[in-house]
Length: 287
Image (cartoon, rainbow, N blue to C red; front, side, top):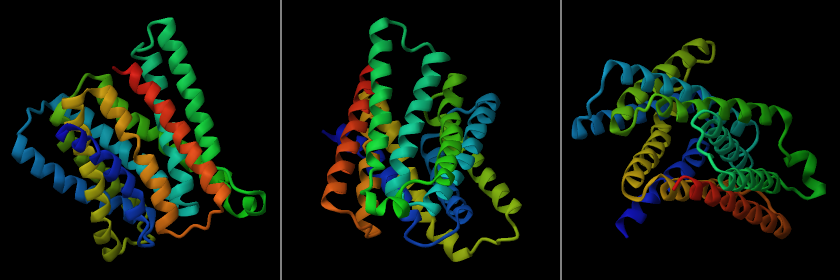
């Protein structure tokens, strides 16, 4: 039972992360910096407690994955800033799932049987359908609330870098707690450079400080994923963790008081269920 409770940490940690970031109208660069500072502090504490063995090579690779995260997270925050949490996160989660899955197929050859290829292809199709369904709005509101091409381009760019963040360590067979500290240094370095290049819009100390909570939420989810994977396996923990899209979508609608008709609620919930069905099928393949 405790293992399944731990597996819920990514659901709520990653689910509430974009919501917390948008409680205060901070710039994406401020959100990124606050998040990365908190993640770095959290990783230092974890490093002191666990004391994992880190080689120079693994440090460089994990550091690079952290830089990829900073770029991906920046564009995710940008997408949310021009749209909303509830609209952006299903598309963001879905495209990341598709990106990491396709990489696993073509680089790691994970679908090595006809059955796996068939199930995996169906799962991707289901996720794409779920993303499309969650973007539904009634015609009278379509112009105001549908995802723009601008938002879509931000999300695709974000998912590209977040996919690189996920697969970089896997590509070089680097696993375990040795990833977290150098990765956090890469995240922080990327955030510092991004804010430096954006120095004409100097970051507000209060906004950065507030987004330490965003980083705490992300770090709790990240640690929960590590612990859940160790106890439940990648297939089960992966499937459960992706339920974060439920928290971010429904939580975003409720907390930010986005007006939804009864029909829109029904369609959005259906879309979330469809996405989770696709996630479940991918999780089965990871067993």
